[in-house]
Length: 408
Image (cartoon, rainbow, N blue to C red; front, top):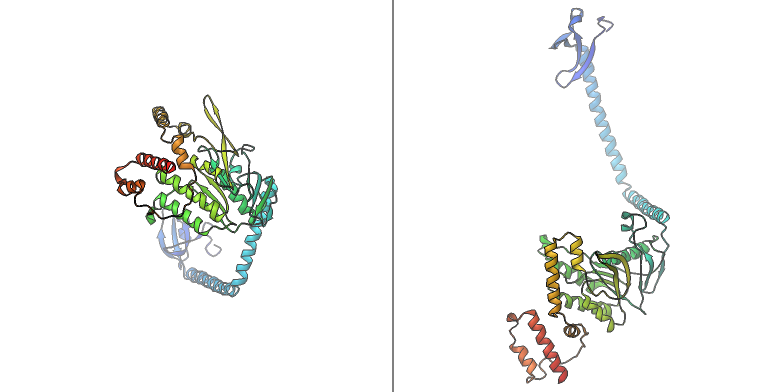
């Protein structure tokens, strides 16, 4: 600017020309002879000079050298870090543990959680337990706490019945979460908690298929159930949220019944089983460590109210039509459902006599299937064409055979 006397002289840069000097048309007469014009604009001219190009080369080379230097430093830093991999991983793990413990401590302080007592006995005693996540998603003070008690002397297997949306799933999940939090050294969302040492927590919850693995909903259920039955020990905690709902009613009840007996008699682990199979409630009469619980419901002239409170006893109905009504199912469908339900109850598809025949725990009798070739029941059984009988007809046959055996 001092050499040319042009006050509006500008130095710019673009990808086409690199660095250039821009001078307005008003001062073109003052342009020195060594300026080389490269571009004409509406109000200005752009020039380059040998000196400007030399400076441009230095700047660009400096940028390239800078990037090369940065990359070399990065390689050195990477090499240095790789030589201390174990130390860095140990530090990261320590920081992660500290982060988790601090977070749990903050939760315990803010939410008023309680320090659990860990004992060696296979027991579980939770007073006013809460779901650690769900409680925070609900308006303050609206979550209903519930207690849970599993003890070898007064019940290791809890069967929870009641309507959908009543709180069965939340209840069994919160027991599992409180047990898990206790074992990782955290305080728990309860007024008091005594938790026996647990080697594993098994869950059979939710209902979904695995299309990619060609597994139906029922197959997924049975795979998970098999894993529990084959691996659970007396020190395990098992929560089951519906078993057998992916197949027919009779098959489902039978499988759920057998699983209940196996976990109670053979495994002896702490178990919570939420189900709509009310037939299983009768097992309390034959299984010593079996206990029934139910979700409280209040019936009103306008419908039902879910109290979300767990109490002793078994539910006598599922209120499925009431839940369907709350979900918005059309009125004609609901009316038709009530008519069908009344008809089914009137026909006694699950009459007291049939229910008693199904519900009594079968005695285990060791004997030969072919002990008597002249037995009329065995003869009828051999000739029976199962494919041509409905499930109701087969049930009637079984009941008649059972009566004949008792008379004999």
